[in-house]
Length: 231
Image (cartoon, rainbow, N blue to C red; front, side):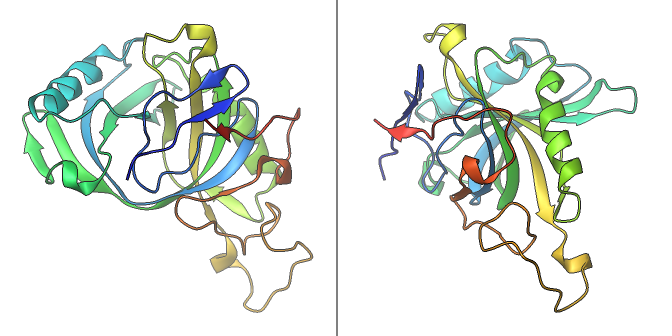
């Protein structure tokens, strides 16, 4: 159950990912990815999170330290945006490598839960992403969804995934900014045909398996990016 390590250009993961977790999205690429259910420890708060994320990080770090759980990657942060564009609520999560790491339940401010499977539209990012204001990266995701509104729609809050710690210089840190999405096939006329083949981002019939993804080159991009390779 040892996780794989990945590299894409100057960015690389240095911590194993949870069991069944998909590889990171290459910087500059857009992907549709499916995440399996994963056990995670979470801390939530109201208002704007500090740029370093300390208000969420330290309770979670204490939680895993007391249970002798290795520091995970990625660290996930979710943002619910208010009508004025500010963050109304945030949730930071440390992922368990597997369910064997611990049981679900409350631990002070920390809540351990099993997150459901989800499909996301993901943008790979190289360089520091501020946990205070990640919204600058969301525009590209929203533009893609607007262009593909007949096939996909947003279904959840903004997600930011960070794969590296402070030991990696900010310019070479690997991040993802994501929007949960769902296919709109259920709203289409039954039996309707599409010209797009299986696995195309232009059709609502494609749903990648848990831990899988739609290759970046099948999505509309502003520039080409390499797929991550295993180290």
